[in-house]
Amino acid sequence: MIKTLASTAKISTKIIKDGSNTGRDKYCQKLEDKLYKRLKKYKRTQFDYIGKNVHEILPTKLIQVEKLPETFENCNGVVSLAQEVEKTVPADIVGYIVGFNKDGKKNQFGGVKMEVLMHEMHHLFNYLTHPKVPNRIYKVSKISSKINFEKFFVENFQSTMPPKKCKEATKKLLKREEKHKIDILQYFRYKLIDEIGAYRSGEHYSNLYSSKSKECSQSNIDAMQLETKLNDVTAILKKTLKTEREGVNQKRGKSIISKGRYFISHLSDLLKINHKN
Image 1: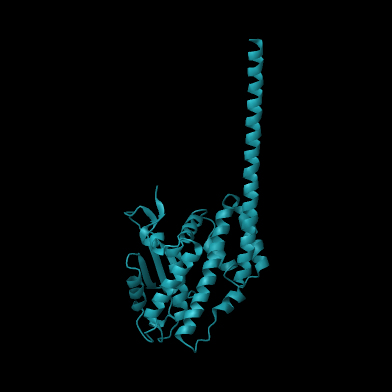
Image 2 (image 1 turned 90 degrees about the vertical axis):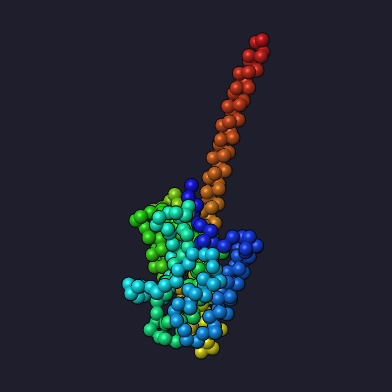
């Protein structure tokens, strides 16, 4: 059986030590702080310094930092799951590719703003410290060849679409993919938590790096109402899980009753035989 993540695509609990969500979050922030302290020394430098410093912090992880092609003109940055073509490693995901778009200015890291840089680095470090996130992303990507769940997330959740319309669109999608609704809801939940964290990290480190920074990631969180959408998805997920559990318990109850009736019937027959004897 091929596992989802290779050791080069995650940080083990032996290193993190505290395997709880809080512990993993703290280790993720520790990596962000470590990278920022290295990068803040450079007011003007080459794009290659990003990858160089990431590799020095995480020498055993397979991470590629590159510039995005021109076809990604409307995207500031992205973190993608990396698969090995030849499958010499017994895993689906062996690492990550971090891509950045230049904003045309030469003041920061070959044209990459600190806010964008640390936004994407939060995604990277979050994937490494929370293996369940890339696991779920990979699992959901295999559900259907007709539905692009990443595109659905960007158009409905990571946009200014009102939460009410987003909830309606999500429910329609879940009806189409009834068998996979829990996986899909968990995917949306993890993605929303990840995006909220990335916007906050981008804002935090951008403000530290430059007191003149006028960008505000919290305004992005508010404009897209990400926290409201997260609450909505969490509520739908809780309701779905409750319904699923009730259904399982009902089936178990019927099974126990059926077995009980079978036992009573055979016990009755046994008593009749013993009585005759």
